[in-house]
Image (cartoon, rainbow, N blue to C red):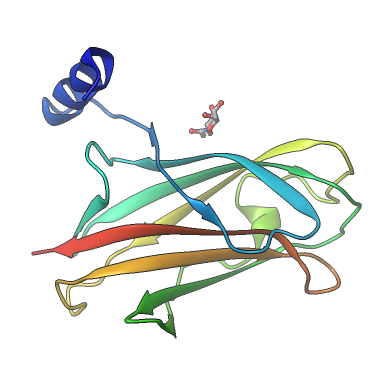
Length: 149
Ligand SMILES: *[C@@H]1O[C@H](CO)[C@@H](O)[C@H](O)[C@H]1NC(C)=O
C-alpha cells in the first residue's frame, strides 16, 4: 500500500468524510465515457456496505451526445446473475445532472445507494447504467462491494 493511500484510509477510518475513487470496470458505455467513480464512505475496497446504511455514488462522465433524459438502472450481480437493485430516484436529471445532457460536456451523477437490512451479507458486483433517450448506455460501470452486518 502506498504511504499516501494508507494516510487517506487512516483519515477515513477516523471518521472523516471521504470520497475515494473506486476501481470500476466499464460494462459497455456507448454514448459517454466514465472518468471517476467515487463512493462515500468507502475507505477500503471492495467497499463495505453496512446493512441499513446509505452511501453516495458520484460518477464523473463525459457525454458524447445530446440527450433530453437519463434513467438509471442498477443491478446487483450475484454469482453472475443480475438482480434489480432498487434506488430511490431513477431519474438522472434529478441526480446532479442538468438536462438536456450536452455533447462533450462533463457531468457528475450523484445518487444514494441505500442498503436494506434484509440484504444478505455477501460480496456482489454492482452494475450501474445510465440510459439516454434511446435507452443506450451513457455509462455502464461495475464495481465490487461487500455487504456487511
Ligand atoms: C464528484 O466527483 C468529482 C470528481 O472527483 C468532484 O469534483 C465533485 O466535487 C464530486 N461531487 C460531489 C457532490 O461530491
